[in-house]
Image 1 (cartoon, rainbow, N blue to C red):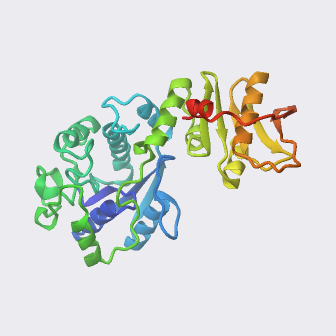
Image 2 (cartoon, rainbow, N blue to C red; image 1 turned 120 degrees about the vertical axis):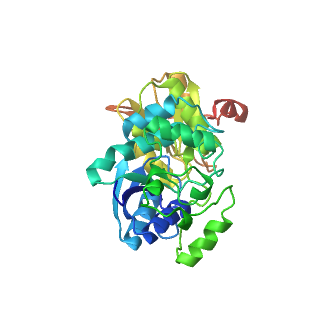
Image 3 (spheres, one colour; image 1 turned 180 degrees about the vertical axis):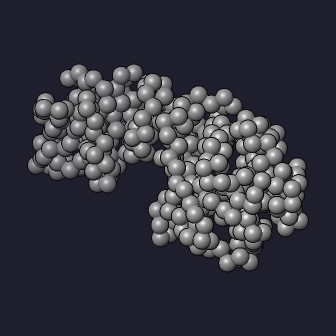
Length: 335
């Protein structure tokens, strides 16, 4: 075993401090950042978890590898062995998956163990004692995961036993409060850290409903569909048809960009209104329904005759919209 480790680095406060504490002990660190559409953390000057992690790696002068979790990860989210949290967050399975990816990388970078910013008791699913040990065992990394922020409260690890890491120079933080981490960050002059309260969309109740609906109506794992779940207003018209309506101009542009083969794109004609993307087979009645949804969110002047244009591949058409959809009907379809 050597003094080189892979550190799981989100760019958030805890993982940043974990890396810093190990660097202070002379450990050579290779940072590993996982790319996922479920990351929902943004800083003041940069966008996304990846950018924050890269900035931290640059500040600390350590190498960083950014890895996409891939479609296998979506299968883990769809069918988690250890279940979900309050949303669609399979935290235990997610940690196992991440650690297994890090484990596979160990021999490739010549590292011997793994560092993580986990804090005992901070997360209800994955950061309690029993789940932590379950995760280590499932990932095949028993004794090889060092958690510098809570090390004094956890069993001694192999790097500590071998004298590679000094246990006394690590911390004994527990619980959800981050007062201690913020204090240490000031001492280390660590600033501009995002996601202090977590940045995973899978814990968001609204996003969770949309993801559950997607899994319930599609057997395909597609990354672009995960991004689409974050855009606009979503409505389940039938088991075979979902409609997404833009909230603003930015949504409208994104929905057009996400239009795939077989999708139908709707936009207001003759009045100001949002666009809509329909995913599934459409009847004439469905088109009229979508037109009434667009009118519900549009603005019509007294001298305007509202109509909606639609296009699917080489097929296109136009229909007059006579009235907006009733609110109770719309609410019954809302995801």
